[in-house]
Image (cartoon, rainbow, N blue to C red):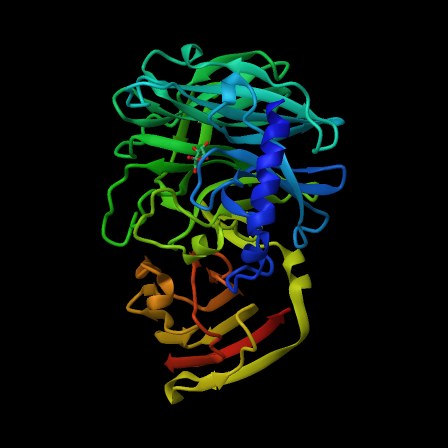
Length: 476
Ligand code: FRU
C-alpha cells in the first residue's frame, strides 16, 4: 500500500530533521506550523464533536514544497493545537500528484471532505491546457482521523468547455435545504472565475452558474474561493492570481480579498461591490472560513504567498517553511470585513499586563518586552501621526492618512506595505518568534507578515503627537 510506503519515508525524514526543526529560534509559540517540511493553505476547517479541526496543505518531505498531503491538527479551544499527523495521502491515480486544497462539510455524525486531486501527466505540456487533471474528490470520516474510500465526483471533462485544466479548491455549504459547491478556475483565455454547483445528496452535482462574471481585470486564475453569509450579505472571498500592482494596492505577487453583495436569480448571478484586499501585509493567502457552534464566522489564512520569490524564509535551512495565521472572527460593518482575533486567544496572556501612558512628542523609548512572544495593544488619543519601532527596525507609522509597515533586514526581502486610512486610533499586535499580525482600529485593516530577527530586541521607540496608552501581555 502506498500509504504505508509514504509513512516509512515521512518517519525517516522526521527522524533525520525533527531536532533541527524544533531547535530553530524562529519556531513559533502559538501558530500552526508544519511539524517538519512545508505548509500552505488551511483546508477542511470545521468544528466536529466539540473539537476544532484544521487540515492543511503539507509537504513533509521537503521545506520547499513538492508533493502535497493533508496534514491535520485539532484543538478544543482554538489556542492549543495538537498535531494529528498526515490525514490524506496522494494514494489513488486521481490524486497521485497532490491532495490539493478543499473543505469540510459536517452533516450529522459525518464529516464530508471535498478536495482537488491533482494529476500531472508526463510529457511536453503547459499543464494549463494539456497534461493535467484536477478532480473533485469526496472522502468522509466519522472521527476526523480515519477516512472512507475516496470517490471522484467531477473531472475536467465535466466542467464548461471554456475552462482550462485549472479548476480546483471546492468549498461546500448548505443553504435552504440544498448543497452548494464553489470552485476556483481559469478559463482557456486566461480569466479567473468561479464555478457554482448544486446538489441534493452531496454526491451528484449539477452546474448552476459562473457568478461574479463582472469582475474585470481580476487576473487569470482565482484560487481558493469561499462564499458565506456575513450579516445579511453574501461574501465571496478569493485569491486571484495575475492582478497588476496599482500604487499601494496589490503589491504581493498574488492577491487575496473579497467582494460583498447578494446572490440573485437562484444563484445564477452575484451582484457585488469592488474587490478589497483582506490583508495588507506580505504574507497572507488562500484563507478559509468556517462557522462554529457559537455562530461565529472564523477565518484562518496561510501566512505565505506562492511564488513570492523576493520574500525569503530562512527557516528552510532548518527544514521547515511557513505557518498559518491565528484564528480571526469576521464581522461586517458597512460592507467592510473586520477581522478580530478570536477571544479565546486571551488565554495566551501570562501574568499581569504592563501598562504605560506616554506623550508621543517626548520620543519615549521603553524597555518592555522580555521576548518576541507578546500581545501589544495601543490606543491613541489625539494622534494624527505616529511612528513606532520595535523588533530590530520594524517600523509602523501613520501620517497624512497613510499607515505603513516597514521591515528592515529582518524582513528578508520584505520592504514596505501601505494602506490608506483616515485615522488610526488603535493597534493590536500579535507577535510570535517569526511573525507579526497587526490589527488596526479593531480589525478594520490587518497586516500579516513573517519577520526573522537575529536577536531579541526588548525596546519600543515611539514618536508623534498625542497620547499613546499601551498594554503589553507576555505570551509564554
Ligand atoms: C493555493 C493553492 C491551491 C491548491 C493548493 C496546492 O495556495 O495553489 O489553489 O489547491 O495551493 O497546494
